Length: 112
Length: 110
Image (tube, rainbow over all chains, first blue to last red; front, side, top):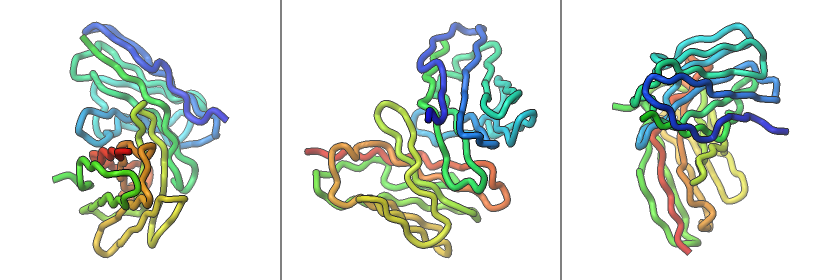
């Protein structure tokens, strides 16, 4: 059982480049989330999805886009990368009842 | 002021010591989670609490809803317990999202 799988683990982008962070879960969870973690700060919610075809903004959505075409996949798109997007990104999912949160291993992104 | 405050921010202990990490929150919640983040960066869910107390191995988590406070205890600490421990709350009426504390860095020395 793979759980939540994120790729890539590390990436360096130049300012203005774009990229997609991939997230896949095999637990049939409806709820999926993207967070960013900055040094000394709590995780901040970027976007979330309550099911295929439904997404909504979180606390810090600017500069990002998401899509949810299937229950399993929830990719995060960065357009026109900026140094402020240097962070560690986590994808997560939750089962009905939110009894537990499952996290991916994280993607460490540096924008230079 | 953050909605979720953890203390201490950093904690160093000797192997075998009893450890307590505290989490206070200022909003109404439906549940509180304790998470563990290892040096490699991965995050693992330890507990979800809505009331009372839960125990798993050497870990004990308690919550006092009236006082808006939760504690995570580690008995007989071990160097492998070294990690960042994160408290996160699910706000009442916003069951879909978690609000996170900034974490407590625990180092257990042999």
